[in-house]
Amino acid sequence: MAAIRLQKLISRAGLASRRQAEKWIEAGAVLVNGKPAQLGDRADLAVDQVEVNGQLLSVAEEKVTVLLNKPRGYVSTLNDPENRRLVIDLVDDIPQRLFPIGRLDYNTEGLLLLTNDGELAQKISHPSQHVDKTYLVKVRGGLSPEMIKKLEHGMTLDDGKTAPAKVKIVRRVGLNCWFELTIHEGKNRQVRRMCESLGLSVVRLKRIRLGFLDLHGVDTGKYRFLDNQEIARLKR
Ligand code: URA
Image (cartoon, rainbow, N blue to C red):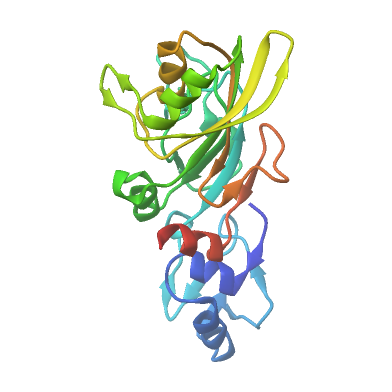
């Protein structure tokens, strides 16, 4: 990972706010490779030794959360008995051990958060949080008004009733229909099963939004770091 400003590094490690970290730097309480740091200095924990108030920062302590645009053909688990490609391989240039928050199926694309911040993962995944997840779905055939009603009112799957969802038709192309489906639950393969129970076959599935986050500026297979404000908003 590239060198980043010390105050950012310290706040990511959860030791203090950036402002407090700046005060420590100005007070000479932050050493980089044994020398007092100046405001504006950068460091990379993979190669530099950073000491804050006498405490050595380790790479593992730094909390990191990234937004990945997952391609099709990757599994979201940390290992795979079938030896398929793993989403964590797409972030293997990051020294921390990240894990995905929730899952996307092997053939589902789109927005997936990866983190080493257990508190954040719990917050987002907890059903009481009702974080909206929007999927762009391409199905074979059309979506009738009755089907839309069922999706919007909630439908019964084999593990219970789904909460009301939001549906927005995006376009119809030939025999296919693209629509956006917003849900806040995280049942296993929920979107595919909702479509299957309507007799619709899913051709493509992409998560395009998670709460206030979207895929803007992140190409397929690439990631970006969430900033402190985004993390704070997610934790709220
Ligand atoms: N719903 C699904 O069916 N699959 C996913 O990957 C995510 C939501």
